[in-house]
Amino acid sequence: MAEMKTGPAQAGPSVARFDPSSLGDMCRGSVTVLDTIEDIEHYREAIEELAEKTAHPNPFYEPWYFLPLLNVSQKNRRLCFLLVHGTDDDGSGTPDTLIGFFPFEQKRLHPLCPLSCLCPWRDTFSWTLRRTPLLRAGAVGNTLAVLGNWLVSRRYAPKILILDDLPDGSMIVDAVERWFAGDPRLCHALEIHESHLYRRQSDAETYLARVLSGKRRRHLRRLRRLLEELGPVRVADVDECEDIDRLIDEFIALESSQWKGKLGTSMASTPEGAAIAKSVLKEAYRRNRLSLLTLRVDDRLVAARSAFVAPPGCFGFKMAYDESPPYARCGPGFLLDLEGIHRLHDNANLLGAGIEWLDSCAAETAALPLSMRTEALRLHRYLVAVRGGVVEIVTRRYAQVVKVLPWRMRRLSAF
Image (cartoon, rainbow, N blue to C red; front, side, top):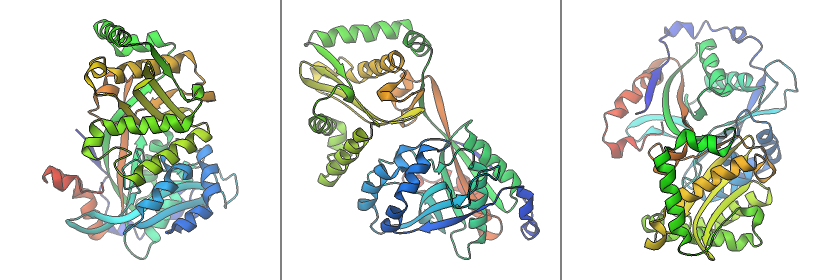
């Protein structure tokens, strides 16, 4: 169950007495608001440079990934992409350096609530699996301070924003907590949700001994033998691929043939979705950022798992497996995940990049990553608002009110 916390209460007059100098050497910078795709394209190179030096990677907010999706996701949506320029936390660097990128969209906090908020942007297909903003390493504190000043100084609504998918224990969460403690103009609510993390160990055997019981490992070996009875088994990644177009087409077709295709949530559920998926996967391959691990019996693709490399980590994207009885009973998805764990440890420089962990980007209840993970990945979601009036009241009580709504109404919440 999600965990909820609320910031300490403060009297209204404290806002008027706020002294910006209380934030120390922070607040050196400015915010640029982008609301069209053309404006975002103009800053593409700067955002890509920021992504290479970010405090925590997020390939889903890099231009090569989100711009193709943005082109088909903008209808009737109010973009508010924020670029924060400024110096590092210690004052070094130039004020025109891009230190933060927050892809927001303006929407209602809930259809039943009259207040608007700035919510992290997500595409129409829900392929934006992580919504962590891009924050420059060494400048996280200043980025947040400048963002807070911008939010407070806005003349018009919304006075509420949401920060999502901030990994527990990271420098970003530490900086956010210091930000709230040092800026009494803001109040906040916190929710913590979980995903699954695969963290590299000293070797594959140590990893598997940590996450799987002896009985479970024997069962997986038995499934492998059953699969080998159906034909020669071969595992490969994209660095062993001769025809990337054919491989991606096979992968998209396999995902469409399983339950996702029946529900209309696969990549190929719409012609537009299939074209964008292929474009994004090919661009990731061109940049040496794609891992597409495949499991074949003879020449038949029976399981495939895609991920985007973002050192020092890797982010899961889509997984598919053959649901026809001869292959499904062999657990091809589990066998492929097992092979991925071995490859991560046999070759620490996966696809030429040092990888220490893989974020599954899967739901908390997903069976496969839950059984193979080394640890829970706790992600912080903050509802941040300017103190005073209805906005503060809603921020403090919103989570408790939404929690009592029926499930179909809760899922409409922006937070």
